Image (cartoon, rainbow, N blue to C red; front, side):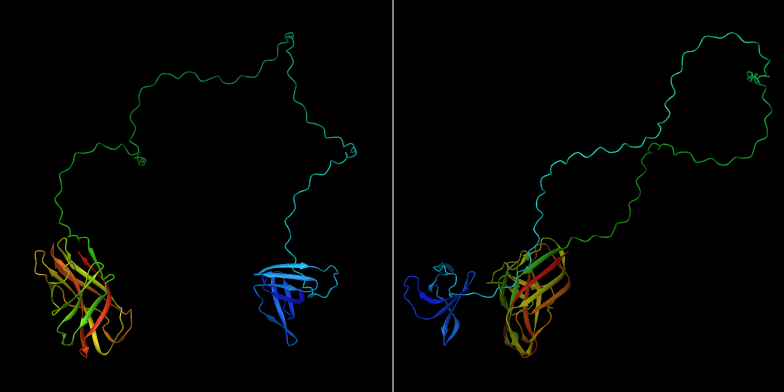
Length: 375
């Protein structure tokens, strides 16, 4: 509905305002229109207000609506009634109601007509035999009857003498195979046979040694002229960055010496797999850098902190050149045959080298994971 009237702002201070308004109410939704230049325009409604005309008072309090009707004439012009909306769609059919109570018993019907005579029943069972009557008088002798049947054969006579042996008959067909007889007793144990040839040597169960740099960033450095090399030694969830002047000999004096692991038994390192992720951006347009890895060893009794290379330098691919984005991955999988002794201390180290173009100094930051197999 729509109401013409005035609005009083602020439910606490109901100071009268003289603007002309129209209030449109649709269920709990209120729209407030204000007369501006002879045209009603939608305006923002206050959080709290009273709307008053001659017959109605509407109180609006933060979404709560109260309507007071003072008019009982039913003919006032304070409402503008909208057109009747279209008829709604028919609702779904209701559920079937409960079954009604049984009706009263009807009156007994009239007696029916007599039915036709039924078919004749089956013959009854024969009655019991009556008692035997008295013996009658002997009758006259009858005529001679016919010859009776031959009597039974008499008993067999004694056995006669054995006759001569007849000629041998032809050989009869071979009879069916008889059933299998019971299993015989177990024979005595035979002599032990000769020893067979020695079989091929088996392979030991392979052991996998995992590596990863963990939360420590590996830093691989090049220097102009290659006078020193920035190595990263990978451990079990950690990394140690060192500087060395040699690719084939590492000296850990002054560094943490826990970067190695000890071989528990004699064996052969048979494979190496590496995955290295670059975590800083590089821009080397005139230089090519290749990252290498090596395995280093020190005897169990050594106290010199020196580790010698026991493998060639293995190049990871691809090499780095030009603009290198964050998260670039380089890898390598290498078959090996490196014999190691029980107790040897092993280190896995990574380092970069300028392999083409301008000789530059640069730092490569990375995370590294790797694994070796020992058989």
